[in-house]
Amino acid sequence: MTQGTPRLTSLAHGGGCGCKLSPRVLGEILAGVPLAAAFPDLMVGAETADDAAVWRLNESQALVATTDFFMPIVDDPYDFGRIAATNALSDIYAMGAKPILALAVVGMPVGRLSVGTIASILAGGAAVCASAEIPVAGGHSIDSVEPIYGLVALGLVHPDRLLKNSTARAGDVLILTKALGVGVLSAAFKQDRLEPGGYEALLASTTQLNGVGAELATIEGVHALTDVTGFGLLGHALEMCRGAHLSADLIADPPLLAGVETLARAGVRTGASGRNWQSYGDSVTFDTEIPDWRRDILCDPQTSGGLLIAVAPAAAVEALALARSRGFGRAIQVGRFRAGPAKISVRG
Image (cartoon, rainbow, N blue to C red; front, side):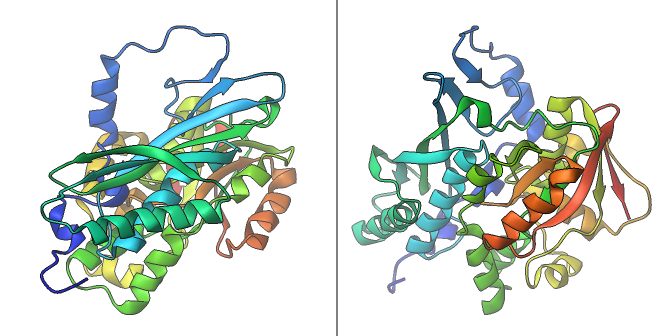
């Protein structure tokens, strides 16, 4: 940043997927909004809080459509653009689809940020889209009080290979592809407590495209898929439980990004982790005492987080090997689905 340029994060009251409305507030709002009327070609709508809407085009193609945008999680404008674009494209991959194009969603405080800074944000997003081999084909911009950037993303998938968040089966293994702790690292960054290695871990995780999702759709035993974002691991696993009418067991100690445990033990957390717990904590039980910081990690909002894969035990080794071969070296089994009400038990 040049001298006199404000920190991007200082211009926003929140950042990344921590900006999302809490599950409880969102549920209260949507309860009063009528669902879309029945359309024979609407394969996925808003009913199960899935990652994207899906419209059947023909027997071999379905259009996947989503939008995602947020306020800055970092101060470097190019990095902010990269993170936001990677996060938006994740919703396409989480449906088992491949993106085909994107549109930019831009809201900027023009009087406070230079044209060069705004251009750098867009350049970061365009670079990620180029790595995903898609164009940014247009978009829309407004002059807003806080900086906002993201994408409308469109993709294609064969209707028979579409993966939803609501189709897990009892006995399925649950695999997580990325380590947790983005929210903790971003909170530490805002507090000027993040070491260079922590920033590198934050950036590496949030800019890693979840392109393996489209490949996972080709594995016969993969039954459901979602990505872990603003509601944390517990929240998105609970969405899968509710959609499939199943219970799940999760481990209490999933992999963490570098530096997260030290910061979390020191009390660094996001406000969103507390709001998340208040929203769904009554659906979660622990079989043993775990420290508050571990509970906060399970609720920690993940910006551009990993994929959460529900896969038959016989295909779990293949799915895990595929994820690791595509650069997700810390992919690991974190739980299992079982028959029962839509609740989660966390095992020590």
